[in-house]
Image (cartoon, rainbow, N blue to C red; front, side, top):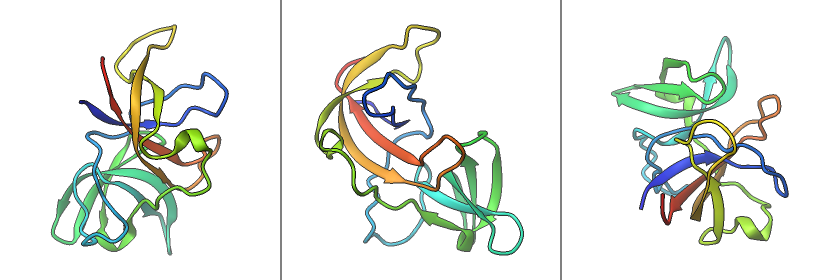
Length: 145
């Protein structure tokens, strides 16, 4: 099946889910700590400690990583020390339990109405809040397309 990272729709609404990365990764919090392409991360950008942003790793080269920010899809190269795996999401409603069946928006469909497909939740992560974005990222496997 096809795995994609999609933004969560608000519970009880027909919110828009959008693709935010590429293939989902099976990254666990107890893993090797090495970043890999398509990992969901919190990237700190700016002066001092930097402001945290949700991002996806595009590539890793030694001690730096190219990340793509979810908020505007821009890319930049950051030292590995400013990029950390996005933590697992906690305190989610029962229908967002890993392994649950749900409906997810087709990230490749264009126009309205939105196109939904049956899917299974593989992973849930939460990055920093950015404006109206609550930081929740879901990985799903579509059962059909």
